Image (cartoon, rainbow, N blue to C red; front, side):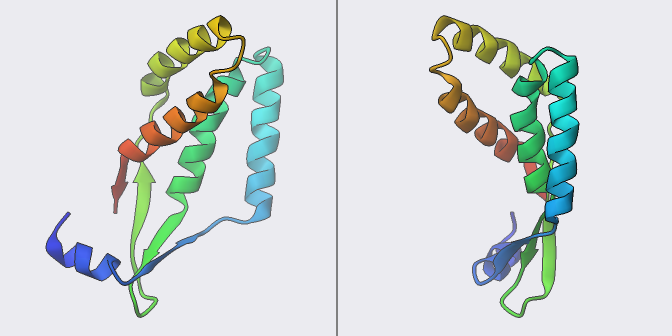
Length: 116
C-alpha cells in the first residue's frame, strides 16, 4: 500500500453498504443450501458470510469522500482445502474446534482481501 493511501486512510472511517433485506436473503439462501446438502453447506457458510461483509465495506477519508472498497478474492476452490481440514478437526474434537474454525475463516478471508 502506498504512503499516499495510508495517510488518507489513517484519518478516515469505514462503512458497510448492505441492508437487513440483503442479510435476510443471504441467510435464506444458505439455509436452503444447508438443507439440500445435509449440513455440508454449513462449513461453506462462514466463508460466504465473511466475503459478503468484506465485499460491502467502503473506505472513506476524513472528509467523508469515498476512497476505496474492500474486495475479498476468496474462491470456492481455495475454501475446499480449509473446509476438509476443519471437518476432520471438528469430527475428532466433537465440535469443540468450531469456534477456532470461525476465527480461521475470518483470517483466511481477510488475507485474501484487497483495496480497490
